Image (cartoon, rainbow, N blue to C red; front, side, top):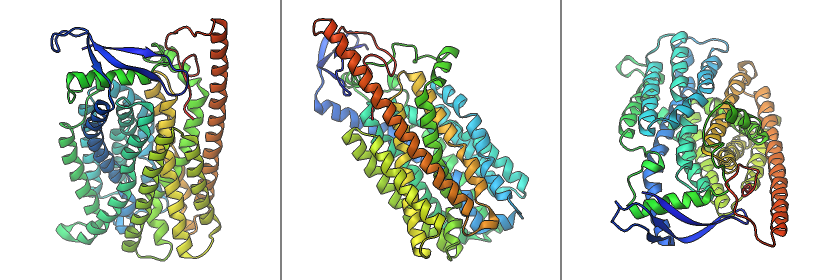
Length: 503
């Protein structure tokens, strides 16, 4: 089926298009050239179907992924270090070795996904890291723990940017933020779910001859493998191969995506190659987005691996610490989804990055100067994590909104998330056991990196605002030189004719 759209080239940030498309495939119902109206009702139905078929299963996969990635923090205060006789910084090593293959294989894995069937590759990756999680519950040594963590990093590499790319391929630019934040909120919910599950599983201590911390890995590893098998049948294909629309709905679905991408590259950034890769690496925006995400990811990874330890250091038992992390994640979930909804409604990204970084900076500052007693310190965790989980999905969507061409968008997203995850190297090595429970180094680094994120976002917003002004002046000059009519040009890359940056 071919959908032909009557187009009107954009004069501002939002593109417009005619109210009808034309189907040129006789095989649909024998009516070549039949007009299909684009109405709010059919668009609403399309969005509802897309939401139901694309988001829920990816949400569940990411939730399970994040539980598997962060359960080592819960296992630590449930007896992991004693059970495996870990000494010195061996726990910190176990935390960051996961990141080495995760970062190195992130971009290759993401590019391979683009040439594969999403349901096959994503479910296979998940099943394999489920086995590695299971292995952590069976290992009897530090070396075995390291091997399992490395295997997890290999299997999970490219999973998050791959899901982000799949979701983004189904939605218009200003529909993407809330959907991606919904997907990303699985990571927040996973923090609460993991803590609650660890609290329950730790009570199995001694059952079947296994310590409580082992049951955390064993049960969650088996759960991951089961979910992976089910996911194979539920993960949506690429948009061009989706089968959950009627022919008319699919025509409108593809046409509205095409209309939203008017002004994008005509092909230069839609296909890979060395020249395209180098052009992406020369884009200053990508590097600043990477720095901003790095600062945010340092906070997220710090809390994923060390929040139970931080809370325990405030004077609570291990069981209490696991439970007390749950409200922190739930508040972060509400903040992230609320900010995502408003960001899409207002069609703005930068103001929400300012809000997010200011919240996190305040939280880190309270922890750094050790202001107040345990209650104030505990309250600061809500600020720090809440700001971070507003910031991370906004940054991913903001970058995607401002990248032209499918290859560049996929490559930039993978690079941003992959580089951001190198912050695990930092967070895993700044929570020094000798500084517990004050962790002066960790809190100072967290504060500094959040300030860096704020500066990077501000430079990005300023640079893209100036880019929009420049393109608008050039458009006005062309219109004036052509007797008040702008010639319909071809599609160009971001920062060129017909494209407008999202601020």
